[in-house]
Image 1 (tube, rainbow, N blue to C red):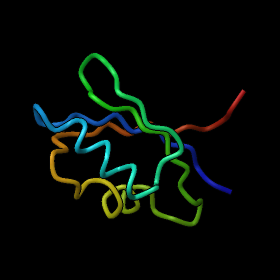
Image 2: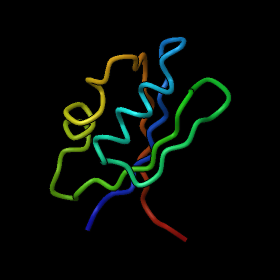
Image 3: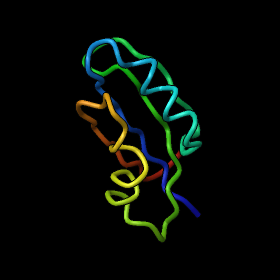
Image 4: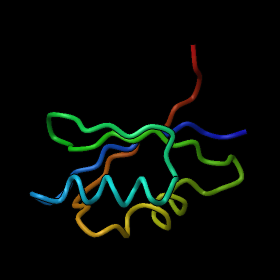
Length: 79
């Protein structure tokens, strides 16, 4: 089993495409979109239920150069 998590990512100006490319290379996401609004990217990730969500995201995503801020939304039930 896994936990579906959505992560919104704000990038430093001019780095969105570089950040997206680095995420794609790491192959940690299910889906990755560019978005309008307060955040530049929206990422859907399935995290193993045995993993600590915060540590998983910290270790696999937040060390990418160009990421300024993130907002993680946990999910509970799919309809």
